[in-house]
Image 1 (cartoon, rainbow, N blue to C red):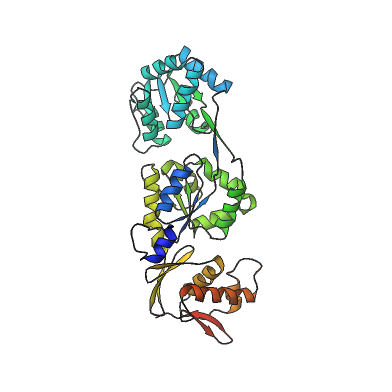
Image 2: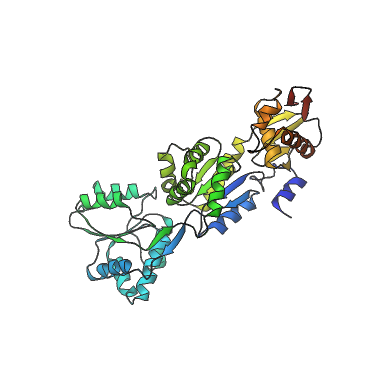
Length: 380
């Protein structure tokens, strides 16, 4: 039995399905199945739209040259920014016959793990980190290294910086300005998705407010979404500032959205489970409840919950219900409701949407016709 069927057959207040009626977009690629499963298990409808893909560069001459450099001249400090990056670096080194030598150099260096995944990769490789930031952010790492937290200062220190998907020029420049010699380790890079169609469709869904939340698990995914949006990027940003919740796996991922003035929901520590809990907490708060025709009606993304039971609605009827609920008891004309329907609709489409809404809600008592004027909700 599907999550929707289970909710239709028993009260929606059941904690097992707290996201029923909501549509959540997943922009992750590598862990999209895991995140999707967590969301669907809680009743959400999931839209998959990978914004990026990770391209390993194990055969890249630049990575090999950086690895040989670290083996030949031992780094004083190694910064592991991601678990997948550190593992990929060691695996690539093993392929070149440099694995043991690299592990030795990493073990002898002052090893910084940016977050728990990097820390886990360090320990899985048989090493132990010397320090890890509480916030899991590069900013805290930089402050630690440049403002006296690191003993002895950075002048003349050789730092191996494992990059996470793209260059980090501000971070690297700050280390060099502090006197360090920085060797960048480009273990993998971000690339556009092989099939951009799902991401383009997501742009349309965001602009039409047909998703309730967009989840991000990496900061570059934000730039990728806006790049695909092109001239519609301002509309995407406006939707994210108002009706569509931007949910990020952690503070690092949230930073580029916050710089654009977008309110973000993000857990303090970067975990997929914590991200889903944020959605479970935040999305229901955005759902208004009205007393209509003697019943409690709660509006969710693509459904109404009537006295605890889910009633999925098509976009047209849902748009009409939202418009009527925004002005409870007030009569809205067909012309006013027409503006809420998808482009290209006519007044006949309004009548059809109202008829389908009544059928879904259980009768005409919920939506009243006011002759020659329009429609209104029968609020109590």
